[in-house]
Image 1 (cartoon, rainbow, N blue to C red):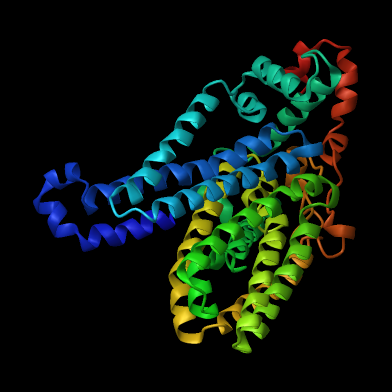
Image 2 (spheres, one colour; image 1 turned 90 degrees about the vertical axis):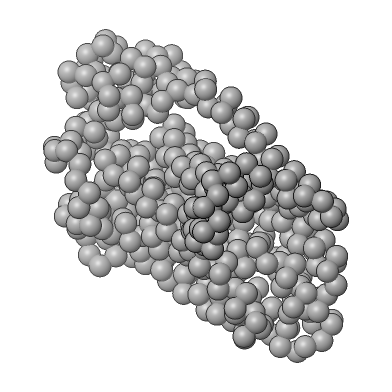
Amino acid sequence: MAGATDDADVWGWDHDRWHNNPGELGHGGPADRGLGRIVTGVGNGMNSSTAPIYQSECAPASYRGALLTLQGTVTILGVVIAYWMDYGTSFTESSLQWRFPLAFQAVFAILLVLQVVGLPETPRWLVQHDRHDEAREVVAAITERDANDPDVARTILDIQVGLKEEQKGGPFRFKELFTWGEEQNLRRLLIIISVELGQQFTGSNMINYYGPVMFQTTMNMGRNLSMILGGAIQCTYLVGSAIPVLLMDRFGRRTLLMICSVGLCFCFVMVSILLSLDSTNAAYGATAFIFIFQIFYGIGWLPVPWFYPSEVSTTRTRTRMQAIASGWNWMAVFAVVKITPLAFENIGWRTFVIFAVLNAAFIPMVYFFYPETKGLELEDIPLLFIKGGVTGGVFSSKGGRTVMPGQHAVQTDVGRKVEGLGGELEEVEAVA
């Protein structure tokens, strides 16, 4: 969305030339570059809203967090490749400087298409469309069990029961997203929007987009050194993004977000103090804390906001909620990218103070309002806020654990129903 919005500026600026000369598209001018950015922006937006849903609905609950965290790690690997490619081509004077990096993106797009061709639909989508045999096969493949295994039957039945409960409300209506009611959809929506805004207003993209500029303007470093440090920061970012793969399903989403926020706040406080001293040695010290910032950010606020919306949304609303989440995220990216240069120009190092305060504010926000979703089956998600109250039961529940894993299956007697089938799994549909 940020790219599309930025491209709207390009189209508006160049409207007369485009409108009066359609042939401009074929000559590498601003018009076709703008169109290309819009097309790739739309594709990127679709990927960022669809991939988390697909992964969350296919991944086993016991290590769903690790698998979803890998999305962020691989994304940052792409950022590292793109950065050093841009750095290398920046020394050329020809159009290769921008043509090659843009064209190289197609390699990954082609690989993605080839990968997706053989992927199955998610079990929940298949059950929702009455393709139960296929759903059993997918669950069996994901869990590495036989299709007739009782655990596979239990999973399918739990999905069926959950879907039937949600379908009692009739056809989906968009206004459902803005109602409290039993499902607490508005609460879920507000949490989703806040986690997306939180991710961007940590100040991470101030560093990722403007790292070299920041080193030049606020720390008085040379251009080449600034660019090299910018690349080194991205490499550090990659290391930080890999750490939560091992931690996400052990410590949970809330814990990593709060630890991350504490670390980010501390780093920016130190950067502010050191830059205020206005000395070369202090600037080098501030640079070190920028690197530490990237490690902390990769641990919590990088991965969680990309998949948390799909974990706190019900099956009935998941696709809409994730799309809204992605939209807010890209709008926040756009805001930070546009605001940062103005902030550096007008208030300099005090920009870091603002983001330090925001990071401190995220700690109570997560503690009081974000439920823990570690280990939960997606069918447990509708029960997240059944305790009610201002915080939806998050504050009064130890560790924010408002629902225990498998609680939906227990409440609906899924296990007993599966045992009653005596292994005749074809009868699962009738039992649901």
